[in-house]
Amino acid sequence: MFTIYTKEACSYCLMAKEEMRRLRISFKELLVTPSSPLMGEVLEKSGHTEVTLTFPQLFDSMGNHVGGYEDFLDYTEEVE
Image (cartoon, rainbow, N blue to C red; front, top):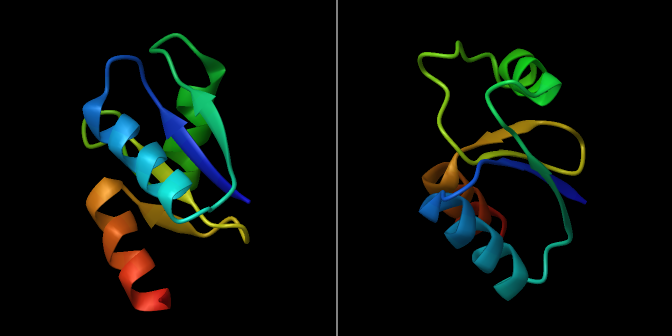
């Protein structure tokens, strides 16, 4: 199961979730707000700083950082 960190009103987050559904990839969504403790978690796991963090941030079933939406598209092309 993939984990996807999202934020509200994020078109790339919506597109990533739609692509995951299309590919029938199960995922757990974690909504991140600026004051959420999840912000620190996603920063640490992704290796980003707050300044460079974009959404969504995706992790595969092994917990490996896939990246953002475009990285996810590249990732799914490689495994097909």
